Amino acid sequence: MTIDWQIKTFKELNIDELYEILKLRIDVFVVEQTCFYPDLDDIDRHKETIHLFCYIEGKIAGYLRILAKGQSYDENIAIGRVIIAAHARGTGLGHQLMAEALTVCQQHFPEQQVKISAQEHLEIFYNRHGFERVSDMYLEDNIPHIAMLQRSI
Image (cartoon, rainbow, N blue to C red; front, side):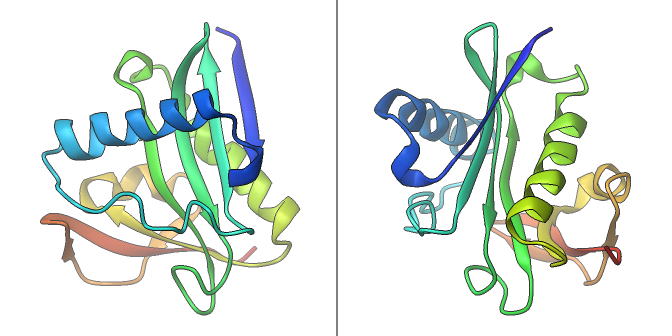
């Protein structure tokens, strides 16, 4: 399985990439998880937002976005919209995506801790990538979430 990784700002995305990213996010977050929320929040277009995504055999397989301090959290950078396409689930791609994301975070935002808002049932997944729970459960778009902070870097 050859993974074609892409790291781009919004202005670097071509029309097909943007379409595939937005379609993947809507297919999973809105349709599959029946979570109706305004996905287009202008954060995608922020000059410091990094879009990390990958293709497997020409099909988009995974995506997330990395946000600079001040976009989601005042004191931390953030990783959000973490998603694996249905056809790539169960392959370990989620772990590869997070490992790649943490590398990109350190390249673009050196020595800054990452904070995430994780779906609660994925706590152990994120623990494996150095994140610790730092909040009680809260509902975000009617889905149980927890805040998690990267252990010291």
